[in-house]
Length: 305
Ligand code: 13P
Ligand code: SF4
Image 1 (cartoon, rainbow, N blue to C red):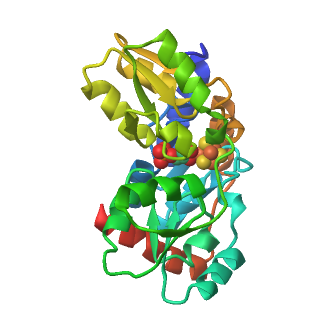
Image 2: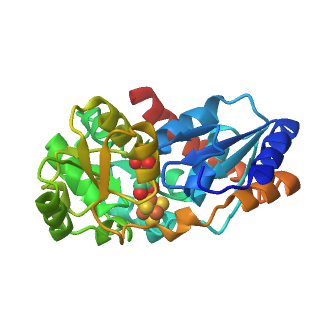
């Protein structure tokens, strides 16, 4: 526990019980927020938990599209964010009109979209995917002639290389992951020649090319536990290091670049979680019309993997 504020944590736990709430926390959140999680995970895991939880209230500690996804899957629950201004710049790089236009330019193409999109964009998709299952989703579409894959051009490039499929992509990207450069990996490799290199598929193609493994955040957590290597260079957002060290106290983890910090993921704090539970706000809700359509794309993904 980084923050020594036991009273605050006790209050959060009491109120959570009273409200019949669960706290879902993404792997990039601040250590103090990871410490109060009921579930900590990547986008796919958190979506699955949101879909099946019995709790009445979901406190989502992550970014806006993740809370929206929870609300799409669990419309009868109250989904709240401790800091509703925490958005994902990549998700904001494409809106529904952009996708409709792209679909018109490619009639007959099947539309696959990363979970890092707004609910309105998801409503226009045939399939959703996450970093865990993007390759599997595209591989499942053998019969489809043309595939649109949005909004991340780097994820699209990675999936295209892995699946051998040509993809119609968009020009979105993650401003945090593109800050990790090939020279960062080369420098860290020089310092730690025995270390295995894990990177997120949102990274530049030149970074992905230098990795031993290309994985989602929770896949990295699993790989770090299971792989016999004692040292790892981590090419993703800084927040994951806390979990990796906690899970593997006898292994060493080196962040590829100190610049890999997502400011939106750092907006949530313990205080804000407490206030959210006290006020049961801010609610994240998706209109019924959008929700019904967006849900189809997410459910099709969950059926594949
Ligand atoms: P994961 O699903 O791998 O946790 O990734 C989410 C994300 O926003 C990566 O930047
Ligand atoms: Fe979005 Fe990148 Fe932050 Fe992930 S790390 S939430 S993709 S901006």
